[in-house]
Image 1 (tube, rainbow, N blue to C red):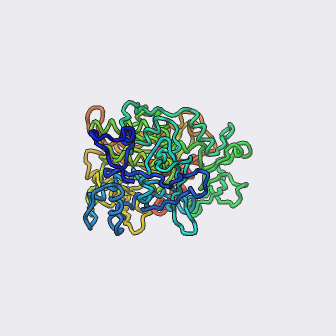
Image 2: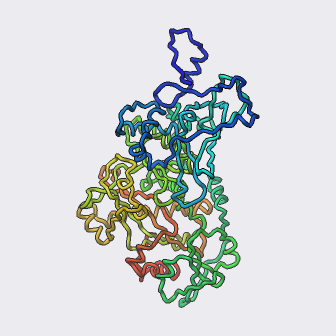
Image 3: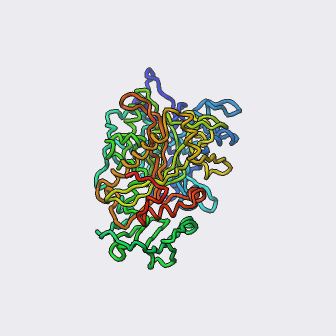
Length: 577
């Protein structure tokens, strides 16, 4: 039913008017609502009171713009549904932009629970004109839920009454379903009821000890008992059990031999996460393993942000983009966003799932509504997008973003011993950088080796350094790298500063390699100089070492000699701590 705004002069039903003022209607067009028309009303217990709603548009966020451009009639239908003026025949940028902004007031989300990582990326959908016009209420009369109907491979929304209704009663649902906390509800409803949350502090201290205890329990990791560091004969040949093909193909050092018998191995070098350290420490304390208990404090994005706050206070250290956990720090984030907005500061953010790699389900946006709604799909962190990255000139395309990957080797926690492999790897964007076209993957992302049909630009670090120094003569690479290593040192120092599970566990039989991805951004030092500030983006467990082995055949010999033989001097590694 279309509802018209009543003028004050007219003697309208005042109560109705009050209700209308309170009801935020998405879109700018006329107000609509859904009402019960059955003369006898609807009974909640009646099996016929269950309804199906069609979905008008189902999409993944990164494909939305292309679909609005190319799917016949889609833009027209969405603009009508959202009350956006669009009368042209040909999709125009302005209308598409408006739909992409407004769609966060209409879309819902679900995820498939099986399939590849790509297939599990959340799907967003917009209900048809009927479903999209069901208004919000804190005391809803109906509930909705998506239903995937396997025989047709189609999703519908099921709508059912929560209580008996009479004819003329309004059909409403709770847009913040499941949220009970008043402040969180207010935040979740912001896309429909804009409010300022500036009175909330944007201060995000490190989470409590219980938070880390809960993560340990959720990971089902059992901490080891205290053991004495194992001691080995100087000429011992170690038996290695591994399921990693790159190790099997490339480890040729005479003091390591492979075994298929896990029970006979001196070294377990596993691809997947090891969980039961207690059993291992009690039964076979002398067996070395390529992982540390609680290393997820580094490798999972929300934990990384939490432990990093030990280094830089509530804003975090200078080497980590400002990060909020959308599940636990939504009000603080909104307050921070609105304060930046007020001061006219850049407000581009990047939303990342806690645990998906390869930039899957990662979105760059300056739309607060979009970020608030993103948290409904899967657990996410939101990080300040680096608006002024140090760029690299590519002759074929111009000034592009690039990121750098270092492989670090963690020999022990107490004492902290950390090395970096002497070769680093570079990844480049394929289009010149600018703070627009936020859904242009090849402009804003550097991970190209997973996208089909996309060129991957490779530059070896030995060739990169002279090119970089030619472009930035005042910034010798040795200085830049010293700052990078300083950031790595600080990160591992704070990550191991507290006992497990609040820090990485000091297990004497653990060793590990991690890949740290970072970018450089322009910043101002305390004395007002322009500096290149490293920004750690993520820490990866058991990284893909394909390129390393291909171009540096001694890679795994160096890794194993440093970690298991304590012979770093003869290897291509640099001591950081």
